[in-house]
Image (cartoon, rainbow, N blue to C red; front, side, top):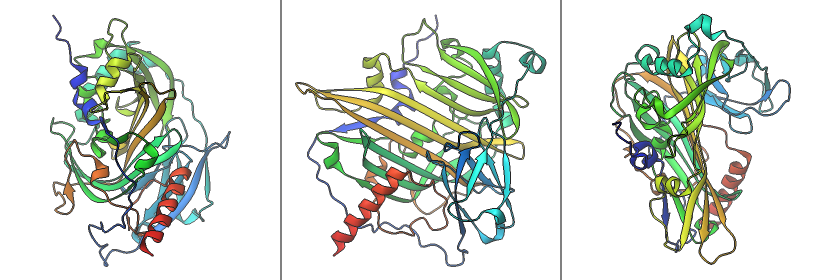
Length: 435
């Protein structure tokens, strides 16, 4: 008989836990004294390039667009408003920038053509029809996924890599920001050929949490950078699906597309009707030539409120019922020299909080995202910073918003308009506190 898995105890889910605490917190902002290292004076000040990327037809902002300096590992990604901020050392100002997004034609633009903060780039959609039979010899979508998982040693880096990444997590009550934490981390990425877990070191961080806006409950996201790192389903297939449990899912094909001007298969998946446990559904984007997974966008099935709640909620008051209404995930991979690596992860969790004998519900949204902005093949691990544990709560580690030059030469994701306004408000509070 097939052994039943305990989804409640799945490590991936535990890393993305919510921690609900009793009320009694007061809003308190302190000036930041957290600056772990001064920028080396020998490092040249990087040039900054800002801009906006839009759909060439609709002129709507494009999120999650990869922006990379050609021939280097330096890059960033657009926010939900299509905005980007790219910092480039002076040694690379003669390079081109590669701009790519799943389903769009790739563009290469010399840095010399980047003008000012209003620089707008238009991307055009690209749709490619693939004959799956002629390329792979089968119409079986599950067989394609199995081949993708089996080929990870050929398609992904099998050397130790040291990655610099920008991480951000936010908590909103309805549409209002209640908590914002940001960090620069170093990831000691283990080879894809072994089963060792990655390590994360905290280099810089800052935060603000307005507990008064959270009313009677304070929320904390447990896992921090690890939560988004574990969306890497090629490195951690045991947390979502692997070759041993593909029978729990049903796979089918969607129309094919392109990424970086390369044809990509689109495979839909959902849990089988015979399995009532909360599992995942979504889409996999698989390179047609190498069969490498290039991206995945998926959700957790939260129809069973009781079981879904058990997967996320660590602590809560007895008189309150908490359950997720949405749990969505995204992972993107980047390629260089014919090999792929983790590039971006995103998790968004939406919860309803029902208090006994109260008429109205509260809705909270937690979002965490991490983008790799530089990396190199190396066994050297930074001796600076603090090594994080997989159950870390970043808001307990970070300090306040105070230093406008906090990130120095590091690339970050340009803040959303709402987040940017929240930061400005925080800074005004800090200025008044220092008077």
